[in-house]
Each structure stands twice: as C-alpha cells, then as structure tokens.
Length: 322
Image (cartoon, rainbow, N blue to C red; front, top):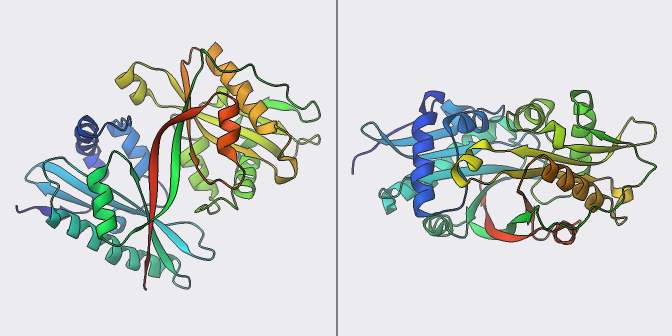
C-alpha cells in the first residue's frame, strides 16, 4: 500500500472526525467527535501542527494521524503525550512502524527545543477495547504504567448531597475566578502522577474558555477572605456525545480540594451539590475519569457520591534517549 504522509492542517478536521467515527463503530469506546470538537482540542497552544503532527492519506482518504503534545513544564522529566488513531482496514505492521518511529524522532526534535535539559518520556493511553493500538505500543517498547477509570453516575439514583462547610462561601463559576481556579488546579494537582503546571493560555483554551465548559454547573468554595479557591468542581457538556447516544451527560473535568482540607468530605459534598444541580438542569448522567492509584484516594470519594466504574484506559510510557 502506498500512502502519502504529511502534517495535519486545521482543514483536515472533518476528515479526521470521519476516522474517529469509523473507529468508534469497530471499537466502541463511547467517544464522539465533530470536526469542531477536534479543531478545538487539537488547536491548543501546546500543539504546532507542522512539527508535532503527521497524517497518512490513501488518495483523498485520511487513514491515520499521529500527534505529539509537548508539556509546558518538565520537572524532573518531560512527559510528552502521544496520540494516534488508524482507520480500521488500514491497520498493519507498516503503518504501525511508521507512526511509532515518527513519535520518537519528532518527539526528540520537539524536546530539544522546549526542554533539552531534562529526560524525555513518551506517554500514551489506550482503552482496553483498543486492542490493536495496545499491541502497537507494547511492541514498540512502551510499558504499562497506570490505570485510568471512566466512571459514571445515574443522576436518577445518586445519594442526597451532604452539607457544605459553612465557613467557605459557595459560588458558581464566573470569569473573574479564572486566575484563582488555575492557581488551585496547579497547586492541588502538583502531586498527581503525570501532571504538570498549566499555563493561563492552555487553561483558557482547554477548560474555562472551551466551547463545552458549563460555568453554571461549575462550583467553587472560596476562602473566607474570598481571595483563594479552596475547593472546586468544574464541568463540561459534550453535545456530540449527546447527539450520538441520546443521553445528556455532564462531564466533571476537575475536582480539587486544598491539601489542608482533605479528609473532611468537602470534595464529595461539593461534587454531590453539582450532581443535584445537574439533575435539576435536565442531565441524566454524570461522568468523569480518575487515576486508579490517585494519591488523594479520589476513586473512593467518587464511589461514595454514586459513581461506578464504566471502562478503563491503560497508561503507557517509554523513556526516549535524547
């Protein structure tokens, strides 16, 4: 098979959405993307398409893509993220070898520009249903490092929300809290496996300024002086998923609590509050993703407010000599 390889462009997003849709029919991982969704997700400040992407074409048919996401911080290691998808029917040894080789060579070039003084690791994720991708990663020397769990809660049966602590003012998200929420995110996620500090530009693009962000269903607890976020639950709604499944699902993207307040049930109470509000707003379900070995024992927190495991993703990593 003769394929043409070139970087992706933003004009390719409708074709890429077709690849995701065809892959979903073969390996249903319940993720649905429109061209607009992909344009927002791929067009982030940390992705330079000419140098950090590749794509394979069979004539006018897009058959595969590869993407590298450099990290904005690298201490003590640059954990560069790898993304890829190949259209069913084109999955063979040659295309796998091309993609995995490109990841390493392009990854080293990007790393030399952004974080040359620290080691480089490539990190990838594969749903347990994505067997071909899993085999490709393992055959290329990636090692399993972590389990991530997709969890769901049926809003018709979630437990009643527990009372929130009265000493911390409860507010619904507004843009005036953007800087405070980013500070809270960077501080509380600092000890999460694979997490690095996020820049204001990325925070706005990917989270609080994203088209799917739901400010009216995102809630903060503030310090008594109102100069700090001590806990937060941020949410999004993906219309493409709802159109494909017929289910209105609220995705909980961030749950965070100040280190000094952990163990008091604050995260669970604030999340429970968000679920009650989501149900009242017509949502049928809530979902989130969590590291199984999260150092804050978050999986147990989510189970207590009504979430249960739905599916799993394996995290893989490969050190790359530079």
